[in-house]
Length: 207
Length: 207
DNA sequence: TAGATTGTTAATCGATTAACAATC
DNA sequence: TAGATTGTTAATCGATTAACAATC
Image (cartoon, rainbow over all chains, first blue to last red; front, side, top):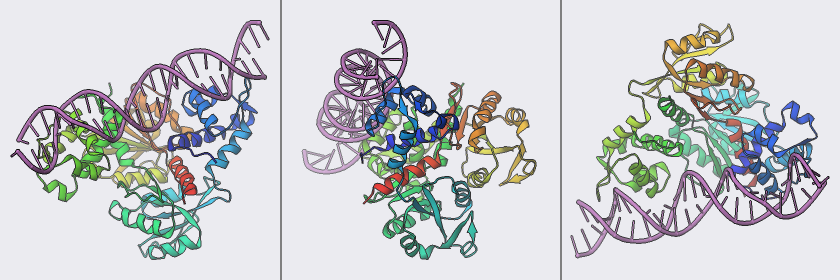
């Protein structure tokens, strides 16, 4: 299994998504420049990425689509699928539960957590909401390795620490707070407010 | 007004947010390494960024907090505030309307749009939902320059084009679809599914 | 062959950091 | 002064791209 850096992984995800398009999936082969156009990167970048993951094309025929998809799956996915938890069943948490429900064959959100008694015990988008105090037990019981953090910023670090202690090794953090680094946990930060402020800044500059 | 690249703008947003913390806002001055710790960057980076925006500190006393905040505001914000629209009042759209409501002094979501008759005319988190066919008229009428895209991927490009034609110059795109480039529009892509898949991949690799 | 594509290296580009003189 | 911090440049690092030999 090759060691691949984050930027490359992101592109692999985009390539795989592009290949899932019906018209492409029907093709036997695809050229680097066609995949590049779909993924909005350069053809050289595609060739370099595919070379890096050890996938060869053939001159004048490009890359075999089915083989590529299988390779991407093998690199990106875990064999039996992965269980995820969502912590913080507010507006954002609920909408993500709906959004993610059934969207990925590999990742399943199997538990949600909150500290609000009104939410505990409810089922949202097919996912049961547990008391946050049960976090460690449920994470271990359900073999959860991934967590989605949709709690208020003030609680993000505490919850992230609890998740890490319970054995979670990947966190998608939607709270606008940078999490302290722990070597055994990979954190992906998605900061919507920052992105909006950035868009606003450049919107102002335009024209 | 200095021309600043995207990465720097992102850090300015983070610096400003860090300075909004009560204990920091109370201080008169702040050292580069303290601001660096809050923003999770290096002290050199902070000094370089502040130098780039033409803000000087004084040796052994650091940077004046109030002056910094004013400078950040002047660079990041538009003088009279900016109006934004949200297109696509699904789960994600509604949760973002709640989340953003009153969160920024500079950016106000003044209109939402959808094509579902059940949603048109309703008010969500203080924001009225209009028929998508009124998009161009309302955007012009309300002086909207920023749009948040929470429509299904299949409709993202069409809506983005309509927005650009109506005069929007900044788009925050939450649909998992890269938008075709137009020189007069700045697009910020936030791809939650990609981030989750990336977190899942590295979660699998850990330990 | 002629034409087109892949594999691969060197060159380029851009951002970050190390290091230190200048300053208080 | 001694100590600490800022301003600034050179060095480093990493990612992207240009270019082309190898191949079909």
